[in-house]
Image (cartoon, rainbow, N blue to C red; front, side, top):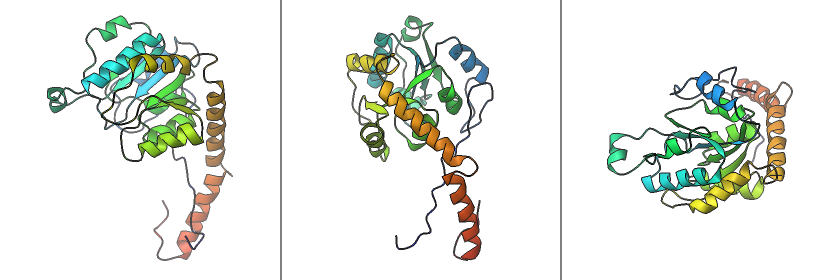
Length: 246
């Protein structure tokens, strides 16, 4: 860039090691932290798949069917955060949880409609993998928690983010790509089951934990992020064309 005025600050995220200390991030949750924690506490370590496609994406009913079928066939425990569809979404056949699905998976799965305390969920010991749309916030939250991922990018930078996770960082596997495509439910079930199996993702889990440790080291006092933030503040006072420090 022709100069050295570049500072790498972050990840700028709240840090938690469990759900006993609620974290407020994003919108108000549709369920209480206690409700989420009480169910996750009944599950063994790293056995639950967390499924969420972000705050904007709403799956078509056909996509909802495939995800539900994959989760059901996998036999895995799961928590699925479903964005509440608008009246227009419903009319256009988006966002419907398949009829009877929640009854069939009762006891090993939870479907939550609306916003959830995602940072706290990902930090819970029971979470073993994260099926995600690969939005940057979700990626950072997953990596900070040391969780492996299953990727389904929908648009924009999410395709590059998925490539970073799968091919470069090697902490994820692809399940689907594109907002209009449908995953194979049998293959999805296999990948979901593998992601929380004892042997299925040892290397990806090791890499995820390494990245989590590196992120935590960066933001603590004396870490690379903390040092860069200090330097940014110092330099901002020296150059009138810089914005004031946060």
